[in-house]
Image 1 (cartoon, chains in turn brown, blue):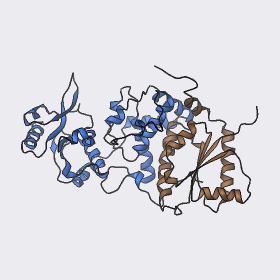
Image 2: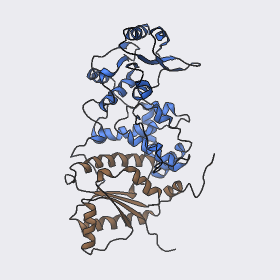
Image 3: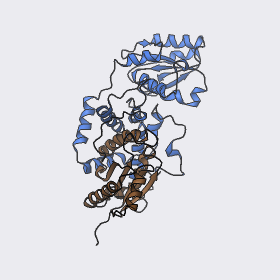
Image 4: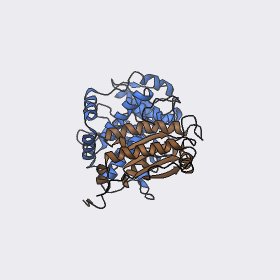
Length: 149
Length: 266
């Protein structure tokens, strides 16, 4: 079997990280191709349910990224998001979800190299952790064991 | 108890309120919520240690609102819920009469919502020793053990949503789980849907939950689901300061401080 290639979903904000990732491309910086980027208007719009859905659909790792504090296009979206992530992360840990697979970061529109770095790091971490079988087992209820009662 | 009945009767006779929400004797040794509209029925009212349901849940229901202005029998947990509902603009002092009940079962009335807030400062929300022990036990487990523990605890859930119905703060007229385009939470009683439902419920109550325990009491299969909200409150206490219902402060999750400390964001 060939080496395990993790599926990473990145939830990024339109104004900073998406532009940053664009800069990575235009600067011709090479980085891991495992990442699928989903663009949001603001980090404040990134619902924790979407993170759960990504895991449910077979993602092995998740990156959530937006503007640095004080740089939000909408002034305070990232501050609200930060509080939510703090609480969400605590809850996930308490439930036993592997929080090493969720990477939060701030990447500005000027930090193309930093984006490449974060993706590479996350891919390496998740590759070492292996596929997220615990969650996949739970999520595969349609394939495996539908309980009809 | 006579004090409570007389006051309730007086309120109905003077037409100050049109409805009394309180407790009556139920089947067996149980009590149940009662809605009294006639002064002569106020003799049904009781209050004792068996009355643990959180009556504040009825304040936001349209069926109840339609009856007119209510008076509500309110022990400490209900007072907390009332303050939280007021903070979320769901009620005002003028929209109801609050028949407060002290832990000694004495009737106490307040002239403003701020008075209730001051009164509630006497009763801080602390974890009981037993709850602390359980939380610490879960904290000590490895992530894999925790995952197994919760999947196992949540697996009998068949999403009857009794926890949602019993919670005074789950008052949305249209809940995410009632929508099916998209279907956010899978309907079958299966681990994935159960997990997602309980995460969603806990997250929606983050910083709002007043820890009345009505959800866990209502659960027909006794899932300790208020452990999640308790744990979140403890977490938030450490990170953002004390979590309590407050009229002016705003909810923990709808406010922020630019210097919130975080250590996990690259």
